[in-house]
Length: 280
Ligand SMILES: [Zn+2]
Figure 1 (cartoon, helix red, strand yellow):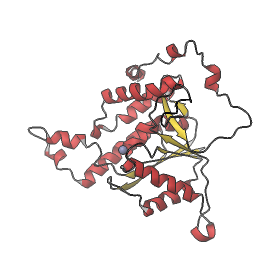
Figure 2 (tube, rainbow, N blue to C red; figure 1 turned 180 degrees about the vertical axis):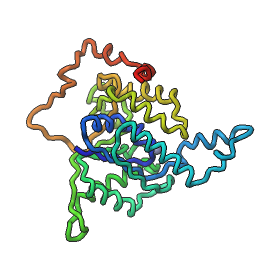
Figure 3 (cartoon, helix red, strand yellow; figure 1 turned 45 degrees about the horizontal axis):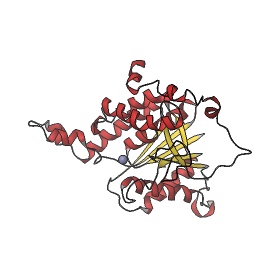
């Protein structure tokens, strides 16, 4: 199986779906990450915080465009190595995209047709005011995935590729059951407990944007711990599916089979994010 993740900035891919990507890597699957913008202007803590100091380090406050981009790229590669992501493709577009760019859509669609992923993961494109760089990235990614399914070899020089499922991350709504229709909600969870320690370490590679150990632990408990309480596991990532699913009967997952409703709340409370560091 091949998974392709398409995100706006380097850190997004690790923070939003890094756990699921690591789970697939550990199953022997291929993972390709496409990052549209370089992210130099996103959470530039290292540079802005240095400027606030009385005697700032000149090498940091004088860093230019290329250095900021390169530093972020190195952080991304280290994070990808920790999770086992085999291929990272950076487009290095500017961060301030406000409208979909046809050339970027074409570039993504060609990569989808070449790489032939079974599934694609991206942020949900209605996460913000529909005009931010994350929403733009996902709008372009969706357009590209659908276009890859319309290629005709005679006309485009490449065969069509049909992605089997698209998963949207960052759907924050908390749902105990699927009758919660007050807003978007995750309808599928990935148990990331086995790789949570690696995800913490991967997120912390983004030191330039102050992803400290404290931030990492807080996020794991507050966001992925909250998804976990819905998923009835310690830590989970929540997703929404694009295509409805077809089965040959009513599916029952192995988690539904193995979870004891009486003790689930105790079981999913066993691991604290801060405890994961002791495994090192
Ligand atoms: Zn971002």
